[in-house]
Image (cartoon, rainbow, N blue to C red; front, top):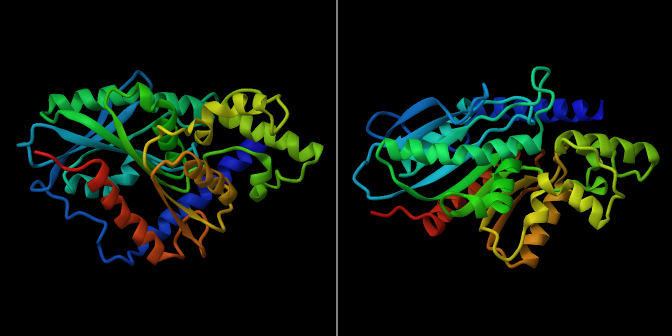
Length: 316
C-alpha cells in the first residue's frame, strides 16, 4: 500500500504543477523555441528495444554542416508510473534550437500491466537506449561524440543515475547533468513527507516497502548501515558520487512534499565533499512544482545554457 500511495501522490503532485506551468509562462517565451523547419526536425517513436515503451523522439538541428554534434537527453517526469516524452516537447525543441541533438526517451512505467517495472529496471532501459539514440543520430548525419543527460522529478532521478552510476559505460563521454526535484537518496529520516522518519516499527516497515518497491527488491538490512547502502545503491544516485562525477546543476523546492528536500541536501553535501563542480538552486517558497519562485527557476534555466556553453560547447 505504501508503495502505491507514494507513486500516486508523486504523480498527482507533479502533474498538477505541470498543468499550472502550461497555463502560465512568466518568462515570456524565453525558454521556448519558435519551432519550425528552419530550426530543426523531429523523428518520433523510434525504437530502442522490444518493449512497448522502448521508444524515443529525436530532435535534430536544421544545421547539418558541422562535423560533430553533442547530444542532450531529457527524461520525462511522472512519478515512475505515468508521463511521456511528448510532454517535454518544448524543452527538447528549446535545446535543439540551441544547436544540440536532443532526445526524449520513454521507459516502462510501473502499472497494473507492468507491476515489475521499478526505478532500477527503468534506469537499465535508459542505459540500454543510448546506443540506439546515437546510432539513429548518426544515420541521419549527426555524428555525436559527447552528451549531457537531464530530467525532471522521476526523470531527474533517472538522469542522476545515468550520470553517476552508468557514465563509465556510456558510448560517448557524459559531460554534465542537470535536473530538477529528482530523488537521489533513500534514508527514512529524510522522508518526513511520508512519515517515514518516526523510527517506529510501523514506519520502518513502511519505508522498507516503499524503497523496496522502487528498488525492485526486498530491503532487509538495518537502516544506516553499509549493508543497507549496498541494498539500495542501485537506485540511489547519492551513493555513486566520487571525485570523477560529472558537473551537476540542480533545483529543488524547500517545501517539497513529494520527494524529500532533505535528500537534496545530502546530494549537495556529497558533491561538495568530492569537489564536483555544481550549482544548487533552492526555491524557498515552493514545493515539488517550483512554481512559487519564478526568479530562482529562471536563474536555473539560464544556468543550463551556461553549463552547456562550458561543458558541452557547440563546435564546428
